[in-house]
Structures are given as C-alpha cells and as structure tokens.
Image 1 (tube, rainbow, N blue to C red):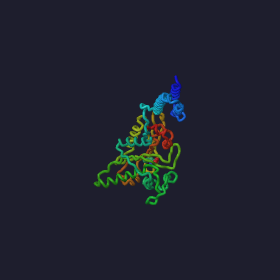
Image 2: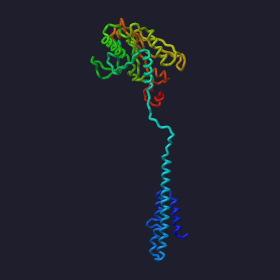
Image 3: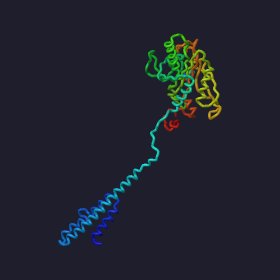
Image 4: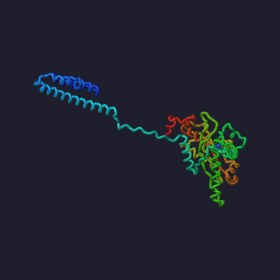
Length: 351
Ligand code: PHE
C-alpha cells in the first residue's frame, strides 16, 4: 500500500467517524482544505522531474477523487441520519384519541329550573319571566304588604338609587311574587280586550322562575338566589287542587312516591290562609325529616283586586319555592355557596 492509499483510507475512517456536519467539514479541511494533506501533495508536484510529474499527478488526482467520493457518501449518510432522528422526534401516534374542546354544560340550578318548568308545563302551566329590578308597588304594595311591614325595610331588600314614577326607589325583587301580579294583570287585560263578550276568563296557570335578591349571606343564604312562583286562579280552585298539583310535582321531581306532604299554617301578607309546604321522605338519606319546600296560600282578596280581577268571582292559589334548595336536596349538596362559586370541579360533576 503506497502513501496515497493510506491517505485515502485515513480520510474514509475520519469521515465515517463524523456524527455531525461540523465534524465532517473539519475532517474534510484536513484533507482537501487549503493546507490539507492532499493539497500539500499537489503543491509538491512542481518540485518533481517532468517524467514523474505526469504519473504522480494522475495518482494524486485519483486519490483526491476517492476522498471526494467518500466525503459525498458521508454527507449523504449524515443527512439520512438527521432526517431519521427528526422523524423519530416528531413521531405522531395517529391511533391516540383526539383532545376535545371543553363543551360546557348547564348549571345545576338551570337544570333544576328546566326540570320544574317541564313538570309544570305537563300540568298545563305557562312559564313566564319578568324583571329583576322592580317597582315598590309590584314587590310590596300590590301584594298587600303594609307600608310599615318589616319585609320592605332596608334590612332585607336591595334598593336601586333610581326612583319610579311614584317617587319610590326601585328594588332588586326580594321574591318572584311580583310576577303573580304582572302575569295576572296581563292575562285579565288581554281577556277583556280580545274576548270582549263577557265570556268567562280562562284559568290562570303559570309558573315564574328567576333570580331574587336579599341582604343575606351564609351557608344556606346567598344575596342572589332563585325562586319559582306559581299561580293558579279560576272560579273554583281549592287547597285540594293545590295539594294534588304540588304532590304530583314532588313525585315527578324527586322520582319517588315514598314521601309524605303536609301543609303547615303560616303567614304571608298576600295569601290568606297561608301554609308552608313540607315534605318528608320515607326512605333514603333524608328519611323522616320534614323539609320546607314552598310557601303557599289562597290569594288574598286585596291582591286579587290588584290583579284586576273580582275576588267574589276569582279564587286561587299561589306558591313560591326555591330551585336552589330543590337542587341541593336532589343532588345531596349541603352548602349553597358551592352553587354560586363557579368552581368547575364542582360544576362539571353535573354534566
Ligand atoms: N314570596 C314568598 C317568599 O318569598 C313565598 C310565597 C309565594 C308564599 C307565594 C305564598 C305564596 O317567601
């Protein structure tokens, strides 16, 4: 093996040992660069006698071509290795399930209100919504609430510093009961206007769910809470009818027959007589405890007049319940604040 074969072999070994482009280019410089070994040999040709020059020149050029071929092969090998490494790094498992965008869902109180609406709708009740900012007359006076009654004091009602056209502060409604008045007045007015032939007015059957506000805040009270008002007015409606409707509602809502229901005497200025509606499950975690689920009563004659109806002719019942409490009972939640903290760890359990 002559010196040129040795050089070619050494170059091949160096190129093969290179694992990065920079290493390979450094190795190339050692052989083919300006002061590389092969370049030096070519420079040395000039010193040779003319007879040797030609054959030696040919040998050196063949060695140069061999080194250049080895360099090209090494460059291709490195490029292939780099590509393989990149493919490995960017490998994609197309069999993995995709990542979904969060779809959101209904709040447990919204679900509960929808449930209440569906059950009452199946019993022929309309669903109405009304303003959360109310006049003093709608929230209190029309509902037979005397001027000096504690329910309208600063203590439990939020007032808005805008006055209505009677010069009284507007309020954030402390209950949904104003909707009895709004709905009944609209119903009576529509009947008088559209069916102006004295024929009897169709019954009023409505529920009105929505937000209500009171200055109150602890584990079982929130300054914003929900109520659902119910009103059933006709010419011959009795407590018995209210009991049937409400019992059906509880049965559908809790999906059980296994409970007792009682009316417990109470007081509201807008109903007389008035009763709290309590239920007690006969089995399950709450078995045997009386739970207050609604206030109710026969609509007071003064309120019937404020509906624009004649109390000698129209009689009926109103009730008001708390969807927040119903949701807590149904789902077994013991702190009302969880409902309104907006914590997804809690809320996502209902979807
Ligand atoms: N408005 C009453 C309350 O907020 C509930 C109620 C409604 C009572 C209708 C009787 C009739 O407590």
